[in-house]
Amino acid sequence: MKGLRMTIAKHTVSTILDTLGENDFVNIIAYNDYIHYIEPCFKGILVQADRDNREHFKQLVDELMVKGVGVVDRALREAFQILQQFQEAGQGSLCNQAIMLITDGAVEDYEPVLEKYNWPDRKVRVFTYLIGREVSFADRLKWIACNNKGYYTQISTLADAQENVMEYLHVLSRPMVINHDHDITWTEAYIDILHPQAQSLALLTTVAMPVFSKKNETRSHGILLGVVGSDVALRELMKLAPRYKLGVHGYAFLNTNNGYILSHPDLRPLYREGKKLKPKPNYNSVDLSEVEWEDQAGMLRTAMINGETGSLSMDVKVPLDRGVSAPGKG
Image 1 (cartoon, rainbow, N blue to C red):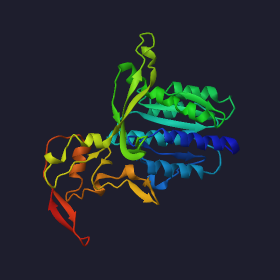
Image 2 (image 1 turned 45 degrees about the horizontal axis):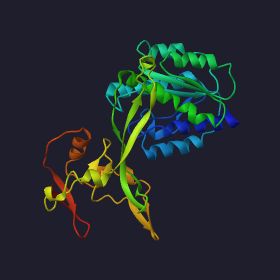
Image 3 (image 1 turned 180 degrees about the vertical axis):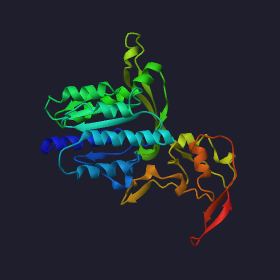
Image 4 (image 1 turned 90 degrees about the vertical axis):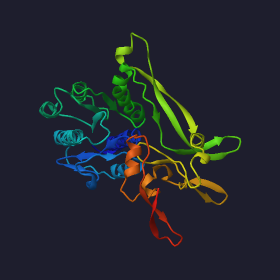
């Protein structure tokens, strides 16, 4: 894979990474005569697809060099083993599992690997992306995708990548569409203009849910029409916990199911540059543990991520004037 095909392949990987979020887990394996993880520190595991990891992967993908001939079956074997280990250990998102195979050719159908690791249950979906204009390998890659609940697509130009990559989302959503599971999703915090006239920046979140086709003749096809969402100012949500109900030293805060802060009195998402306020680069990936210094590791954070209700009492650390920490009650 050289020249334009390599450029298209790298762009395809980056486009796939852009479709992932903090509820997803990912890794990238490069392969030729042997396999190697593009980030050696992540060997044999899946990592959370947060912004830092996605950007790190993109940079490493951009630096990939052509070397040798691609041996696909070893890469497939390694990918299946990682997914199997994570599933058995109850790690990751515990939802859909998928392998994206990006290649400019396949000389066999790799039936022994698929039979050993994925059949008959086919728990892992395999999506195949054929890079370039060559069509002689199309039938094999179609066979791999169709026999593993995936989807085949050919990407001939850079302009094709965005549209073709998005097809896998429709395939993954079909069971949800058929069952009409209207899951509601809240996004991480982001900064936007709340009132166009005032041009004031504020922290917002978006609540969204899928929109399905309800026609009986299309129900078995699982057609996802789109997503509907509404922006919500976090200051409006915080009004549900008014200060007068919390006491003199009380305060309320919000965090996501990944432990990242949505709203907190100690969160400082903006900085001033001249006369303008600008958002800090990683303001929406500040972990709760960075501002709530628990004396017992992660007790409150774990309880909130797990959606537990009720109350608890615990020791916390509070800063003193000279920067020395001391235990306190929270």
